[in-house]
Image (cartoon, rainbow over all chains, first blue to last red; front, side, top):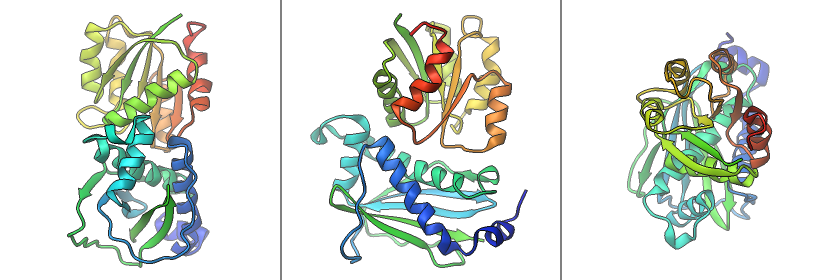
Length: 161
Length: 127
Protein backbone atom coordinates (compact mmCIF):
# COMPACT_ATOMS: atom_id res chain seq x y z
CA UNK A 1 0.00 0.00 0.00
CA UNK A 2 1.39 3.41 -1.00
CA UNK A 3 1.76 6.17 1.56
CA UNK A 4 0.20 9.53 0.84
CA UNK A 5 3.72 10.83 0.24
CA UNK A 6 4.23 8.22 -2.45
CA UNK A 7 0.85 9.02 -3.92
CA UNK A 8 1.71 12.72 -3.98
CA UNK A 9 5.08 11.95 -5.54
CA UNK A 10 3.22 10.16 -8.29
CA UNK A 11 0.44 12.67 -8.68
CA UNK A 12 2.17 15.94 -7.88
CA UNK A 13 0.97 18.50 -5.34
CA UNK A 14 -2.53 18.76 -3.90
CA UNK A 15 -3.37 21.49 -6.41
CA UNK A 16 -3.28 18.92 -9.21
CA UNK A 17 -6.28 17.30 -7.55
CA UNK A 18 -8.53 20.32 -8.17
CA UNK A 19 -9.57 19.14 -11.68
CA UNK A 20 -10.30 15.70 -10.22
CA UNK A 21 -12.44 17.27 -7.51
CA UNK A 22 -14.33 19.30 -10.10
CA UNK A 23 -14.84 16.27 -12.36
CA UNK A 24 -16.01 14.16 -9.41
CA UNK A 25 -18.51 16.88 -8.46
CA UNK A 26 -19.79 17.40 -11.99
CA UNK A 27 -20.31 13.65 -12.47
CA UNK A 28 -22.41 13.38 -9.32
CA UNK A 29 -24.66 16.25 -10.37
CA UNK A 30 -24.97 15.06 -13.97
CA UNK A 31 -25.60 11.39 -13.20
CA UNK A 32 -27.70 11.64 -10.05
CA UNK A 33 -29.46 15.00 -10.47
CA UNK A 34 -29.46 15.38 -14.25
CA UNK A 35 -27.88 18.86 -14.00
CA UNK A 36 -24.85 20.45 -15.55
CA UNK A 37 -22.93 22.73 -13.23
CA UNK A 38 -21.76 26.12 -14.48
CA UNK A 39 -18.74 28.19 -13.60
CA UNK A 40 -19.65 31.44 -11.77
CA UNK A 41 -18.65 34.72 -13.37
CA UNK A 42 -17.31 36.00 -10.04
CA UNK A 43 -15.80 34.28 -7.03
CA UNK A 44 -17.40 36.52 -4.43
CA UNK A 45 -17.94 34.93 -1.02
CA UNK A 46 -21.44 33.68 -0.26
CA UNK A 47 -22.84 32.77 3.12
CA UNK A 48 -23.64 29.05 3.25
CA UNK A 49 -26.89 28.06 4.91
CA UNK A 50 -26.35 24.31 4.72
CA UNK A 51 -23.03 22.47 5.03
CA UNK A 52 -22.48 18.75 4.49
CA UNK A 53 -19.20 17.15 5.53
CA UNK A 54 -17.64 13.73 5.04
CA UNK A 55 -14.42 12.71 6.75
CA UNK A 56 -11.67 10.82 4.96
CA UNK A 57 -9.34 8.57 6.93
CA UNK A 58 -6.41 6.39 5.99
CA UNK A 59 -3.96 7.15 3.20
CA UNK A 60 -5.79 10.38 2.59
CA UNK A 61 -7.08 12.11 5.71
CA UNK A 62 -9.20 15.21 5.85
CA UNK A 63 -12.68 16.59 5.43
CA UNK A 64 -14.64 17.19 2.26
CA UNK A 65 -17.49 19.65 2.52
CA UNK A 66 -20.28 20.88 0.27
CA UNK A 67 -21.69 24.30 1.19
CA UNK A 68 -24.70 25.96 -0.36
CA UNK A 69 -27.84 27.98 0.24
CA UNK A 70 -31.00 26.43 1.64
CA UNK A 71 -32.63 26.98 -1.74
CA UNK A 72 -29.87 25.03 -3.49
CA UNK A 73 -30.11 22.18 -0.98
CA UNK A 74 -33.88 22.03 -1.46
CA UNK A 75 -33.45 22.03 -5.24
CA UNK A 76 -30.95 19.16 -5.03
CA UNK A 77 -33.40 17.18 -2.89
CA UNK A 78 -36.23 17.91 -5.30
CA UNK A 79 -34.21 16.61 -8.23
CA UNK A 80 -32.85 13.56 -6.39
CA UNK A 81 -36.32 12.48 -5.23
CA UNK A 82 -38.15 13.58 -8.36
CA UNK A 83 -40.65 15.64 -6.34
CA UNK A 84 -41.84 19.23 -6.58
CA UNK A 85 -39.74 21.79 -4.72
CA UNK A 86 -42.58 22.64 -2.34
CA UNK A 87 -42.84 18.97 -1.34
CA UNK A 88 -39.26 18.85 -0.03
CA UNK A 89 -39.12 18.34 3.73
CA UNK A 90 -36.72 17.00 6.34
CA UNK A 91 -35.02 14.69 3.83
CA UNK A 92 -33.01 17.70 2.65
CA UNK A 93 -30.16 16.93 5.08
CA UNK A 94 -30.09 13.30 3.97
CA UNK A 95 -29.94 14.38 0.31
CA UNK A 96 -27.12 16.90 0.76
CA UNK A 97 -25.22 14.39 2.87
CA UNK A 98 -25.50 11.83 0.10
CA UNK A 99 -24.30 14.36 -2.48
CA UNK A 100 -21.27 15.07 -0.30
CA UNK A 101 -20.68 11.35 0.26
CA UNK A 102 -20.80 10.62 -3.48
CA UNK A 103 -18.48 13.53 -4.33
CA UNK A 104 -15.98 12.33 -1.70
CA UNK A 105 -16.17 8.72 -2.87
CA UNK A 106 -15.99 9.60 -6.54
CA UNK A 107 -13.04 11.92 -5.90
CA UNK A 108 -10.96 9.44 -3.93
CA UNK A 109 -11.67 6.72 -6.47
CA UNK A 110 -10.07 8.93 -9.14
CA UNK A 111 -6.72 9.15 -7.35
CA UNK A 112 -4.54 6.15 -8.17
CA UNK A 113 -3.50 4.32 -5.03
CA UNK A 114 -5.91 6.10 -2.70
CA UNK A 115 -9.27 4.36 -3.16
CA UNK A 116 -8.09 1.17 -1.50
CA UNK A 117 -6.68 2.77 1.62
CA UNK A 118 -9.09 5.60 2.33
CA UNK A 119 -12.34 5.20 4.19
CA UNK A 120 -15.24 7.65 4.32
CA UNK A 121 -17.20 8.63 7.39
CA UNK A 122 -20.99 8.92 7.38
CA UNK A 123 -22.00 12.45 6.33
CA UNK A 124 -22.65 15.21 8.85
CA UNK A 125 -24.93 18.10 7.89
CA UNK A 126 -24.99 21.52 9.56
CA UNK A 127 -27.92 23.86 9.00
CA UNK A 128 -27.17 27.53 9.61
CA UNK A 129 -24.21 29.77 8.95
CA UNK A 130 -23.14 30.93 12.40
CA UNK A 131 -20.39 28.40 13.07
CA UNK A 132 -16.62 28.07 12.86
CA UNK A 133 -14.99 24.94 11.51
CA UNK A 134 -11.59 24.03 12.94
CA UNK A 135 -9.79 21.28 11.08
CA UNK A 136 -6.42 19.68 11.72
CA UNK A 137 -5.67 20.16 8.04
CA UNK A 138 -2.07 21.16 7.54
CA UNK A 139 -2.28 22.52 4.03
CA UNK A 140 -4.55 25.08 2.37
CA UNK A 141 -7.97 23.76 1.45
CA UNK A 142 -8.65 22.84 -2.15
CA UNK A 143 -11.78 24.71 -3.09
CA UNK A 144 -13.98 24.88 -6.16
CA UNK A 145 -16.98 27.12 -6.72
CA UNK A 146 -19.69 26.18 -9.17
CA UNK A 147 -23.26 27.15 -9.98
CA UNK A 148 -26.09 24.69 -9.57
CA UNK A 149 -29.29 26.05 -11.14
CA UNK A 150 -27.78 29.56 -10.74
CA UNK A 151 -27.17 28.91 -7.03
CA UNK A 152 -23.54 28.92 -5.83
CA UNK A 153 -22.11 25.78 -4.29
CA UNK A 154 -18.66 25.47 -2.74
CA UNK A 155 -16.81 22.16 -2.54
CA UNK A 156 -13.85 22.19 -0.21
CA UNK A 157 -11.26 19.55 0.67
CA UNK A 158 -9.16 20.10 3.77
CA UNK A 159 -6.26 17.67 3.84
CA UNK A 160 -4.33 16.43 6.84
CA UNK A 161 -1.24 14.65 5.57
CA UNK B 1 -42.57 -10.73 -14.81
CA UNK B 2 -42.94 -8.21 -11.97
CA UNK B 3 -40.04 -8.15 -9.54
CA UNK B 4 -40.11 -7.84 -5.74
CA UNK B 5 -37.04 -5.87 -4.66
CA UNK B 6 -35.37 -5.25 -1.32
CA UNK B 7 -33.34 -2.02 -1.23
CA UNK B 8 -30.88 -1.65 1.65
CA UNK B 9 -29.25 1.73 2.29
CA UNK B 10 -28.98 3.93 5.38
CA UNK B 11 -30.07 6.93 3.30
CA UNK B 12 -33.81 7.04 2.62
CA UNK B 13 -33.12 9.44 -0.26
CA UNK B 14 -30.75 6.94 -1.85
CA UNK B 15 -33.30 4.14 -1.43
CA UNK B 16 -35.80 6.25 -3.40
CA UNK B 17 -33.19 6.99 -6.07
CA UNK B 18 -32.37 3.30 -6.46
CA UNK B 19 -36.08 2.45 -6.77
CA UNK B 20 -36.59 5.17 -9.37
CA UNK B 21 -33.50 4.03 -11.29
CA UNK B 22 -34.83 0.46 -11.38
CA UNK B 23 -38.12 1.71 -12.82
CA UNK B 24 -36.29 3.98 -15.30
CA UNK B 25 -34.22 0.96 -16.31
CA UNK B 26 -37.45 -0.71 -17.36
CA UNK B 27 -37.63 -3.18 -14.50
CA UNK B 28 -41.22 -3.94 -13.58
CA UNK B 29 -41.41 -3.68 -9.80
CA UNK B 30 -44.44 -5.19 -8.10
CA UNK B 31 -43.23 -4.49 -4.58
CA UNK B 32 -40.31 -2.64 -2.99
CA UNK B 33 -39.21 -3.33 0.58
CA UNK B 34 -36.75 -0.93 2.21
CA UNK B 35 -34.24 -1.46 5.00
CA UNK B 36 -31.81 0.99 6.62
CA UNK B 37 -29.05 -1.55 7.32
CA UNK B 38 -28.22 -5.24 7.05
CA UNK B 39 -29.87 -6.19 10.33
CA UNK B 40 -33.16 -4.55 9.34
CA UNK B 41 -32.90 -6.33 6.00
CA UNK B 42 -32.52 -9.75 7.63
CA UNK B 43 -35.68 -9.06 9.64
CA UNK B 44 -37.52 -7.82 6.55
CA UNK B 45 -36.60 -11.03 4.71
CA UNK B 46 -38.39 -13.10 7.37
CA UNK B 47 -41.65 -11.45 6.32
CA UNK B 48 -41.10 -10.64 2.65
CA UNK B 49 -40.25 -12.88 -0.27
CA UNK B 50 -38.06 -10.96 -2.74
CA UNK B 51 -36.53 -11.62 -6.17
CA UNK B 52 -33.71 -9.07 -6.05
CA UNK B 53 -31.62 -7.36 -3.36
CA UNK B 54 -29.75 -4.09 -3.88
CA UNK B 55 -27.41 -3.36 -1.00
CA UNK B 56 -25.15 -0.51 0.11
CA UNK B 57 -21.87 -1.42 1.83
CA UNK B 58 -21.15 1.30 4.40
CA UNK B 59 -24.06 1.28 6.84
CA UNK B 60 -24.40 1.45 10.63
CA UNK B 61 -25.38 -1.54 12.80
CA UNK B 62 -24.67 -4.13 10.08
CA UNK B 63 -22.85 -3.24 6.88
CA UNK B 64 -23.47 -4.73 3.46
CA UNK B 65 -20.55 -7.16 3.58
CA UNK B 66 -21.74 -8.66 6.87
CA UNK B 67 -25.29 -8.85 5.50
CA UNK B 68 -24.22 -10.79 2.45
CA UNK B 69 -22.24 -13.19 4.64
CA UNK B 70 -25.35 -13.88 6.73
CA UNK B 71 -27.76 -14.13 3.79
CA UNK B 72 -27.17 -17.86 3.10
CA UNK B 73 -28.65 -18.50 6.55
CA UNK B 74 -32.00 -17.04 5.52
CA UNK B 75 -33.98 -19.98 4.08
CA UNK B 76 -36.25 -18.05 1.71
CA UNK B 77 -33.55 -15.68 0.48
CA UNK B 78 -30.32 -17.64 0.16
CA UNK B 79 -30.64 -17.87 -3.64
CA UNK B 80 -31.82 -14.29 -4.22
CA UNK B 81 -29.34 -12.33 -6.36
CA UNK B 82 -27.62 -9.43 -4.59
CA UNK B 83 -26.18 -6.40 -6.35
CA UNK B 84 -24.06 -4.05 -4.27
CA UNK B 85 -24.54 -0.29 -4.82
CA UNK B 86 -21.98 1.87 -3.05
CA UNK B 87 -19.61 4.83 -3.14
CA UNK B 88 -16.90 2.49 -1.89
CA UNK B 89 -14.52 1.95 -4.79
CA UNK B 90 -12.03 -0.28 -3.01
CA UNK B 91 -11.12 -3.35 -5.06
CA UNK B 92 -10.85 -5.42 -1.88
CA UNK B 93 -14.47 -4.63 -1.04
CA UNK B 94 -15.55 -5.61 -4.56
CA UNK B 95 -13.65 -8.89 -4.32
CA UNK B 96 -15.00 -9.60 -0.83
CA UNK B 97 -18.59 -8.89 -1.85
CA UNK B 98 -18.31 -11.05 -4.96
CA UNK B 99 -16.60 -13.86 -3.03
CA UNK B 100 -19.53 -13.96 -0.62
CA UNK B 101 -22.05 -14.28 -3.39
CA UNK B 102 -22.83 -10.77 -4.67
CA UNK B 103 -23.75 -11.01 -8.33
CA UNK B 104 -22.92 -7.44 -9.29
CA UNK B 105 -21.41 -4.19 -8.14
CA UNK B 106 -22.55 -0.66 -9.04
CA UNK B 107 -20.61 2.42 -7.98
CA UNK B 108 -22.35 5.65 -7.03
CA UNK B 109 -22.92 7.92 -8.87
CA UNK B 110 -24.73 5.77 -11.42
CA UNK B 111 -27.18 6.05 -14.29
CA UNK B 112 -30.35 3.99 -14.84
CA UNK B 113 -28.50 2.42 -17.80
CA UNK B 114 -25.77 1.19 -15.47
CA UNK B 115 -28.40 -0.21 -13.12
CA UNK B 116 -30.01 -2.03 -16.04
CA UNK B 117 -26.65 -3.35 -17.23
CA UNK B 118 -25.89 -4.91 -13.85
CA UNK B 119 -29.35 -5.93 -12.67
CA UNK B 120 -31.06 -7.43 -15.72
CA UNK B 121 -28.50 -10.24 -16.20
CA UNK B 122 -28.83 -11.45 -12.60
CA UNK B 123 -32.62 -11.67 -12.84
CA UNK B 124 -32.32 -14.60 -15.23
CA UNK B 125 -35.12 -13.50 -17.51
CA UNK B 126 -37.53 -12.64 -14.70
CA UNK B 127 -37.67 -8.96 -15.74
